[in-house]
Length: 311
Image 1 (cartoon, one colour):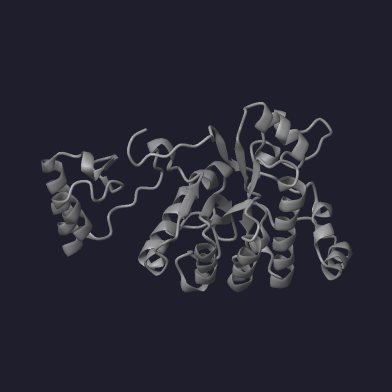
Image 2 (image 1 turned 45 degrees about the vertical axis):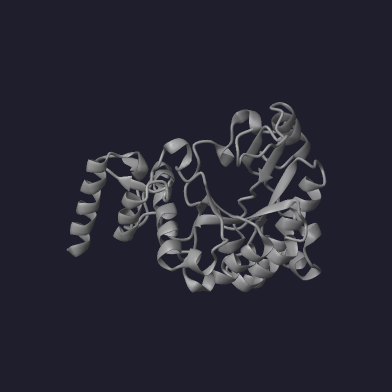
């Protein structure tokens, strides 16, 4: 083995498997009597869903529907056979995209948050050790979300904190610090997944069609990354790890093009090749790793950046 490499017996991990409650009845066993009564009296079924219908119901492949008609992602045994066993997957990370943060009643939203995580633990993680959980949090109540992270992190089967790209505000803002502090304290990465809602996905308001909303989600990821960097989130929490899930960054395919914020980084990368191996820059109609460019192109990018900054 090469120096610095490490060996693992894990061959295949599916990092984005969506499990969903069949209905609110899947969650009420894990809610207090107060909120069970609230659900029954109000007829509550689910938090607000996306503003646009999908091309297919539940945005799911036709073969993802269990034979008994259950919702896709709601039957652990069916998913286990169709996904884990069929494709010989070692581990699958569950990302339940349940919109607890869009419930305006914070106490009820927190009850749903806790219920979803308990449901994941009892109905999924207990079923097969290959499943790993993501901690769903209510970003509308960061202190309660931080408390939930600390509670769930005691179960090693939960391997990340789950956020959605569209949120009430950019995650770099200080009100969200308790969430990231708890994640770092627990040693868990934060997975920011495609989706969420409440605010328009574009800076100019609501589009008409789902294809616009779906494509425009890259803007939310870009805004969140810019916020985290500009607001000093990674300075405050040097150990913080953030994964962008379905954000258009896989396999070199970047939907969001983020330019360098500090020209000093370009100068340091020019003078010390290899110090910034992940530095991506805008060239001309495409992006490239700065280290891969010729000295001439590097200098042109530096000159252009310094000129634009001076304006």
